[in-house]
Image 1 (cartoon, rainbow, N blue to C red):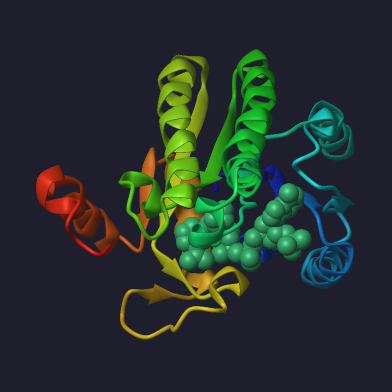
Image 2 (tube, helix red, strand yellow):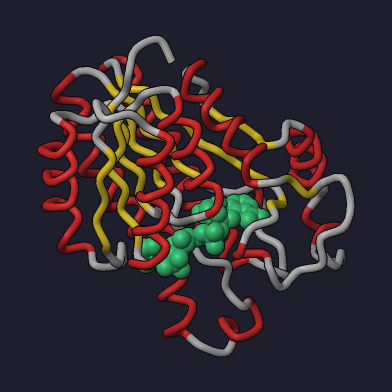
Amino acid sequence: MSKLQRIVIFGATSAIAAACARQWVMRGNSLFLAGRNENKLESLLADLRVRGSSGQQIEGITVDLNDFERHEALFTRAEQTLGGVDLVLIAHGTLPDQSACEQSVAMTMEEIRTNALSVISLLTIAANRMETQGSGTLAVITSVAGNRGRRSNYVYGSAKGIVILFLQGLRNRLARRGVTVITIKPGFVDTPMTAHLEKKGLLWARPETIATGIVTAVEKRQDVVYLSSIWRWIMLIIRHIPEGIFKRLSL
Ligand SMILES: NC(=O)c1ccc[n+]([C@@H]2O[C@H](COP(=O)([O-])OP(=O)(O)OC[C@H]3O[C@@H](n4cnc5c(N)ncnc54)[C@H](OP(=O)(O)O)[C@@H]3O)[C@@H](O)[C@H]2O)c1
């Protein structure tokens, strides 16, 4: 990153986001963190303040991001705390129980609300403010799951897919207004979200590795980033399997 940035992270207590925050604070940037879990947020802030220096703003707020009514005020608070915003990372998310969602409209709607609608609300506010200032970067953690609906996780995948398409359009709109829009697509990452899954094989990544990829993508102003990069080729193959064959696969 060429100059110091004022960074807002939504869902900051996520393992991936926290790893990004550590890298950014050690580069001298200022941070405003929005996280739901108060204890996790406080301990993250304490850790970051030890790593940072006195000239850096390192502040945070506890918030449930499904409370859309608070989004506008939240962004204003971040701007006032940091004196402006150069970079927004949206990281929060939940990995639903697909079978349970199939039996519950309420649970399915709640997952779409968390993984798609809350992100779109935050993006709409941040995009308009960055468009007005004529600069800034919006980076959003989506997932390779958003590339194709699969029977094992299509509630989560479709929510991420909504965001991926929204970001595509937003990038197209803001490209000529000095604003960068980055779609981050991780594959399997060893975090609390996947604690219940068996983690074997080369495809699993550590949150610190994903964070390095995100920090690099921001520096290079990339558009769409697969982390790790092998997922670009895996998803290329998966996307091109004809539907007639795909519907018979146990993916
Ligand atoms: N892990 C993977 O394999 C993987 C793969 C692809 C994409 N991703 C995406 O990466 C992002 C980060 O996930 P992670 O892997 O780092 O998992 P994580 O550590 O479990 O982080 C998820 C975070 O989202 C927060 N969150 C959920 N609902 C929220 C809400 N309504 N308001 C505020 N915060 C909320 C959680 O807060 P609490 O601490 O309060 O629960 C938690 O901090 C997510 O968008 C996820 O979908 C993960």
